[in-house]
Image 1 (cartoon, one colour):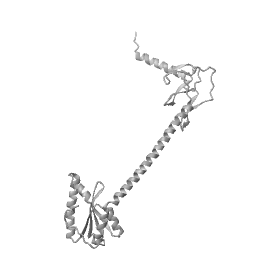
Image 2 (tube, rainbow, N blue to C red; image 1 turned 180 degrees about the vertical axis):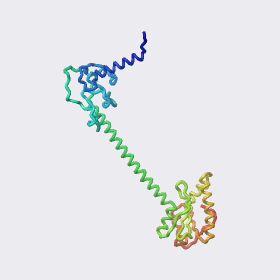
Image 3 (cartoon, rainbow, N blue to C red; image 1 turned 120 degrees about the vertical axis):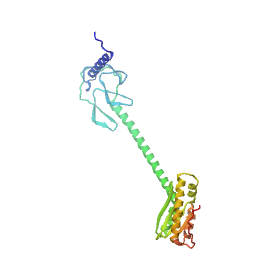
Image 4 (cartoon, one colour; image 1 turned 135 degrees about the vertical axis):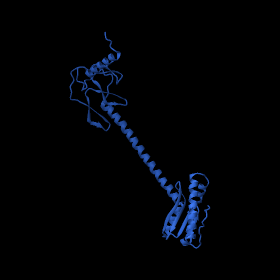
Length: 275
């Protein structure tokens, strides 16, 4: 006598349950003679009436997904907080008295509640988005103000503004900028024979102290400047140096350069600049 495995028996029982469920649910609108049979539902964990069936469109937080047999899905009813389920009132029942409903789910109420929750979450998200946008706008405005303040105290910008205000042609060359801060820059004036050299002593001291890549970069720049300065002076050129980190002091020193409508001559030497 052949043995029947436990798994085969379990499979047969499951198939029988599915067949019974298909007969009870009828997968239509519940117009069968079995629709009032009370049965166990895994979606509700209890007994329910036979005219209820499961719909994935009605399933969600707080909802088991069980709907009335006359309920069907329509894509035209989906959206704006509605799950797409509509009640078909055109069908007729076969005269059986309905059994006691263990649990009844109103599709319209469930859909409306879910839609209201989504609407509330949507309004909250929109409000948070507006607040985040305002915060970003404020941060950008503050960043622009801070950048403008830095530029206002930046020796390069101060000198460039001074030259523009006096219609003096110039070209900016040999910029030493570390981490967004100007250390030194050359202004090549007019025909290129005159150079206005700016040094920021605060940044020079900052770069001269620590060892590492920044120090090597600074030393290489100074070495190159000494060589260039000697060659330029030897060729008959002029170099005016301004060494200051203070905006007022920079503006006070600019008129002292003879090529900038001043009287005092301040020429650079081919030596390392001192803050």
